Image 1: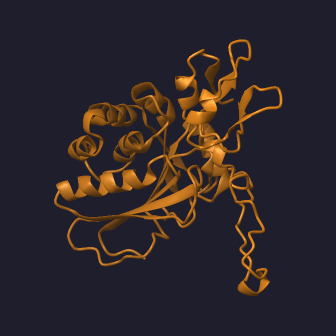
Image 2 (image 1 turned 180 degrees about the vertical axis):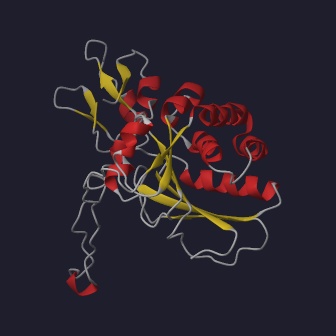
Amino acid sequence: MNEINTIEIRWHGRGGQGAVTSAELTALAAIHENKYAQAFPSFGPERRGAPVLAFNRISTDRPIRIRSSVLQPDIVVVLDPGLVTLINVVDGLKPGGVLIVNSNKSVEELKTEFTGNWKLAVVDASSIARKLLGVNIVNTTMLGALVRATDVVNLESLKVPIEERFGARGGANYNACKIAYDNTVIDKITPQGTKKNKVFPVEKLAKWNELPVGCVVTDVGNTKQFSTGDWKSQHPEWDDRKCIKCGICYIFCPEGCIKQQDNGYFRANMFYCKGCGICAHECWTRAITMVEEA
């Protein structure tokens, strides 16, 4: 449910990609234009890489009194292309709405994933972010795609919020936003499209009377179930000829996903690796190279 003249946006991302920041910057840009806006996230105790949601409501003429999650958005923005096959990102998207996706696929390829009366906007935000920012964090990059595909805010209105949020890196982030704006491709999805059948995983929690005495943890977690390593666009590869088994990659890995093997060399568990590249940056023997995902 939304109020008259209120635009609702739902952001799909993974922990660490900046979906919450995207929503906040969008709200600040709207407020800069003398509109009413709200931004809020929805997530539990997920670790970095797990699917998260963030929401916006923007009104041109009246305060927003609704505080519930956005169930029928006018706009859906997907920061991670892997989520398209993992969850139903278009759930509740209104007819005539806009779907904006970060993907290296063409708009023609991506159209086969959906069927509905929506506008589709596609941009390779990951490549832009890596080139300009050095990391695959696409929050500001996807703001450019949002502005190009909709008239929710003006591009110039994002400049001050971005520069205030990122300080010395504000200029680079705003440039990434502008380049994404220029490179976003827009097309139409039709109800007659040939959507691929998908089965989306649903987390089933034990009932209170099914839990063992003492609240024993019976599952090791949902990292593997939800493929939290799938949002990376690059992954590390080791050259054992250069590796001296110093363990510097193990020490600096923010995910704790690098382990030493029986032969003394190190490897990353790709179910956890988010492709941040810190291991390659810190490896002083240059034994680690970041390689594009296939």
